[in-house]
Length: 138
Image (cartoon, rainbow, N blue to C red; front, side, top):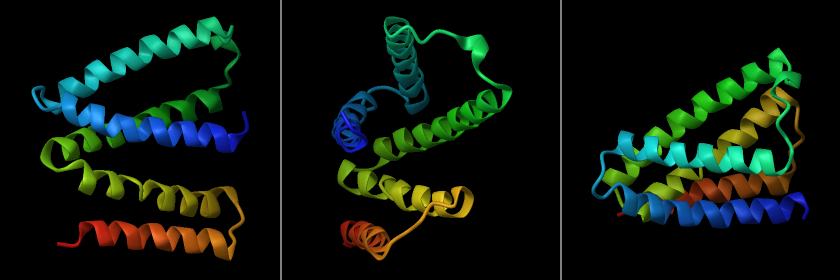
């Protein structure tokens, strides 16, 4: 599969995640719900790494360890905030705001990685922002 197919799988899974997480936090405190979710993710990720033979931890550079750690911190903050938002609000309001992550990632990619932009890409980002604003209107 190419990156577009994997991205589509990611989007479909993330959409299902919103529903499943919303149901999961109905009767569980958000931080505990997140801890349980992370536990299961860890088990699944370890199983996949072993099944695919990707277990050479000691070949990872210090720089990669640092970036993976920082990514984990950012993911943790994102998930904590997401679970809290789902506990307090409807999916139809939480999920669109969460999707602003595309705009943030795009801007960070441009600023720090020198990624190129196109009018279509900027237009898409603007449409996402407009879509979020429309979904939040009363």
